[in-house]
Image 1 (cartoon, rainbow, N blue to C red):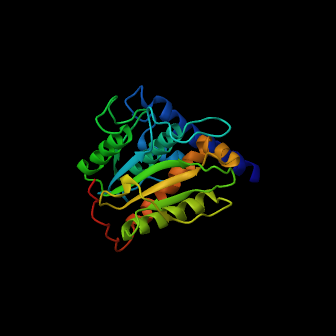
Image 2 (image 1 turned 180 degrees about the horizontal axis):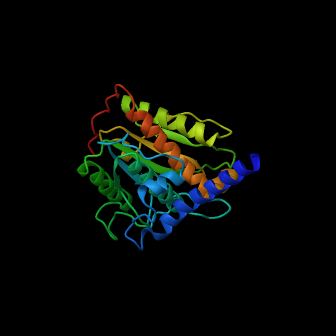
Image 3 (image 1 turned 120 degrees about the vertical axis):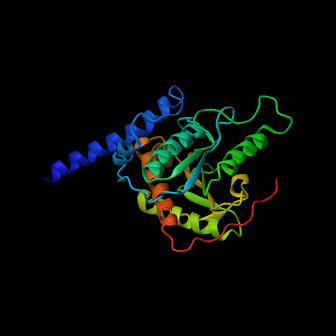
Length: 257
């Protein structure tokens, strides 16, 4: 019986790993449509479909993209933008299976800025991402990133929120707890504040650093599609916990940019 359970568990993670990687590979060719249905994809990732998030609109911001590759793996040279998008696409599938409406700031390998804008490329990219979130009337924003540091010793996922924002702090805490429980990192970092453009839009928001590409062991984990699927599942669990609150804290007003 133990061998049967072990074999079944192995099959589950093989399926989960393939789900995210296949979704990313075919996103551009099929206009970012997932290959599996929302419900079957969620089941493969170990979550049963429900309507728990019905009425909630979640914006997912896959950090970087296009000319902006973000952090780079020390050993593999993998670019952060690729991993961010894969986690974001998996998360979109899971959130939809729970009844949420989802807005993506990008669903492929591109930035949102012009080739030669009158302002800095990064600023225009951020402004256009923010516009998608605001115009889509998102109730919640999740920005997905990978971390790096000069020293290879730093590790562990960490969630950031806007300083002084009760809603952001509460959301970040729930996301951090879900990630720590799901990923069981050797170091539990705790939430922190950050001066990030996308966290200042006047809605509950959090920036999720999924792990360190500058840490050799964690780089290997982040390159594994099954591990990225677990990250997406943990973030979804955090959103479910947020939605289940009897009273949700109020966010700070949007910051003029």
